[in-house]
Image 1 (cartoon, rainbow, N blue to C red):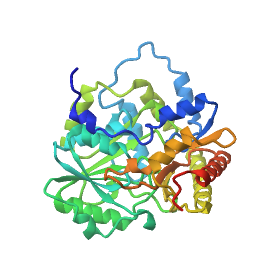
Image 2: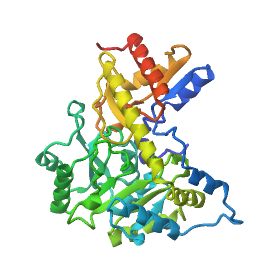
Image 3: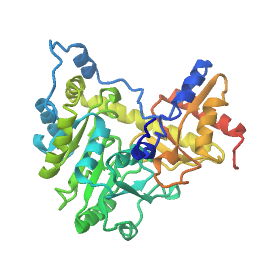
Image 4: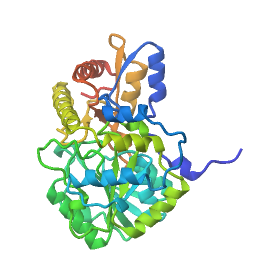
Amino acid sequence: MPISSRRGALMPESPIRKLVPLSRQAIARGIKIYHLNIGQPDIKTPQVALDALKNIERSILEYTPSEGLLSFREKLAAYYQKFHIDVDTEDIIITSGGSEAVLFAMMACLDPGDEIIVPEPAYANYTAFAVSCGAVIRPFLLNIENGFAMPPAEEFEKMITPRTRAILISNPNNPTGYLYNRKELDDIRDLVKKYDLYLFSDEVYREFCYTGAPHISSFHLEGIRDNVILIDSVSKRYSECGIRIGALITKNVQVRKNVMKFCQARLCPPLIGQLVAEATLDAPESYMEEVYEEYLARRNFMIEAINKIPGCYSPMPMGAFYTVARLPIDDADRFCAWLLESFEYDRKTIMIAPASGFYSAPNVGRNEVRLAYVLKKEDLATAMMLLEKALEIYPGRTS
């Protein structure tokens, strides 16, 4: 039998999806699962998007341009202007989800062995994409005790080596909900400029910032116009995860040319998804206002509930719709599996993600989990009750 590739062996399992077989077994046993493990909102997709899907009248579902539909990119450019992100249509390349945008950015900018500095915990697939292109993640570990805040710039600078080619940030952060302030971003800007690095900036959750201050995009940072690669997606803010539409935005002409080669190799982003996403941009402002208020209320409710459970702690996330919480457990991977295999209360359980999968560094986050507040408050209340009941009887409880 042929031997599979070393690259395949190095690809990490998804901490979000690797427990799915256990969840299916639990469902088969008649257990109701409250899903806090994945960023799949339960909020309705905008009606204009659903109407666009129903009313497609094309007789041929054809290829689109590899960079995406012009009309969609024009509307996206206008959308970014509302956030004072000054980009032109030609700066925008449509991708099959934000994940493909991250992968193409790495493939276009990095060579095998090049290093990317990533503050961690971070979106788990960053490591998978780095493995795919032969790049190396250099994790900069952050601490739950101070809410995963960035350290002084001089500490961050110590991570830079002759092989460093990029810094990757998620702002607001998935999985912690951390939101970078102006000084932190200026410090990163200074390092990017000093060492001529790329700045991959994942801004998928820009409309979910709970501090009252406007979101600061990496495109707002002066002097690094050609260094910034912005990653975006319609999935989260419009509850459109399944249409797989994202975007890669950059002013760097050479990077765009390189990205387009990968886009041409995969032919085009999904036609139907683009039509739906384009229509979504006509959703009334009241849609996002209502969604924002709903997530804010859910955040406040869930964080308060977590911190009331003996032995548990979560900092207050400032953005997105996730938090990383510390639990009184021996091993989060074991606990998350136990919830699906061995625990039930009133024929119910919860599904959460072990935070170890959001660190590329080994043996980190062993007593931390990521929870997504993507359920209505009544369901969150049940989920928090189930978490407390589970911790009371978990064999590996530590305190």
